[in-house]
Image (cartoon, rainbow, N blue to C red; front, side):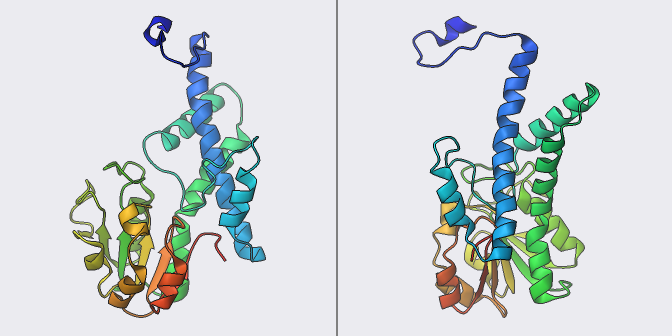
Length: 249
């Protein structure tokens, strides 16, 4: 196995199979922990009038910590982090160890999905019959993967509340249930006449859009819930919309 890496500047760790498995699980669990920690700090920022972007930037300047995976939002998704954190928790349980920290990481991530729902209910009241857009359906930009995507979970909750949901993703139609919500080809079509939009994936096409003009296509109250803290809030407000991020002042 080590011979495959000859001539490549990469470390080779020789270890037993159990340790190799734990290296994989522990690495992803640690990154997931950084994300959930940033999200917990974001919740606190909302309560003390701090800005999580500034706080996490300052924290990330510490070389012992680093800036990666410290961005607050609606939580992680995809095929690796959810699977590996649950697998490590299960592995701990069947071997007689209660991994308290990892359970908290998983719980925090699940709770982040509720943030846009609670915000929309607080501003709009009963969501039955309201038109709501979801911008970004994949679990991260530059992929067509919707496995464990926060957007899909959020859409399911919105539909359960009776909302009328339109989804947009730059890769086009994604493999969600085609009958559950409408998928449209442009961000403009998703936002037209919507009362609120949830930004669920930080695609450049979404983050870099002209939000001052986009909110003009929406109906009152023109609520933009930025679940990835990637949209220019000043542009939203300049267009007459309400901007709400995660832990942002």
